[in-house]
Image 1 (cartoon, rainbow, N blue to C red):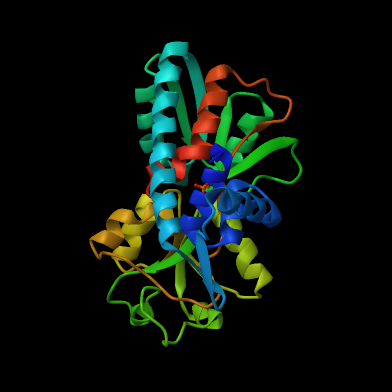
Image 2: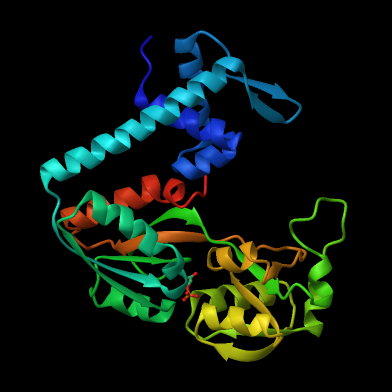
Length: 308
Ligand code: PGA
């Protein structure tokens, strides 16, 4: 049986997401390329791995076995990379700048990366979108992590994770009976209703703020902004204090959602679907450490953060 690692990787993604389209997105491949890899794997194995019922696909018994093995092979390869990494002695300085919101997960990723490559020293700058673009332009950093890359800069920008924006409220807010966790059928809050609310928003220059403004403009909704606050943490506190509704990345909310201090409202057209990008100037010559970190992010960030 001549099965390739690539086939197993593609299969693992389709089997985990139970969708060819989503796997293609995740792997940055076209859907026909994904289908082809799975088809070749099925031919090699000689048994069907998926069955289709209606529009949905399910794993067959053989599919579940191959899924189990492909996950453990992937894990072994990561361990192999760890070992090779320390043998190769990837070392040196890595300078990264990240959007304020990315502060909620980048340190976790750096924890794993630095453990793997103990001779790497990292300098991390956390700032807002406007400053990040300036730093890219002035070649002051190796890599930048932020939302939507600007169209007018010559960048290499790769998606590594979703970054969805949601509306938050305190649990006792009148709109809080419309929760996105509730099972249908239930009524969503119409966008127009948001015009009666006050919103606490991030400062000008923030990527979150920028995305929100573009979204409401595109939907012809005029919201009232209360306080402008330069920190997601302070927005969450102010929403809990009843000063208004908040609009933040889902990535900032783990703790408050778990403790039931805030809820996500189920509003029509929400969440605003965005992504996290790792980027650098096209003309930038990346160091070995920067290349290693970029690869690490693209291949492992989601599983380390439990987003798979
Ligand atoms: P912000 O950026 O923290 O500046 O809002 C997040 C983003 O770029 O989406």
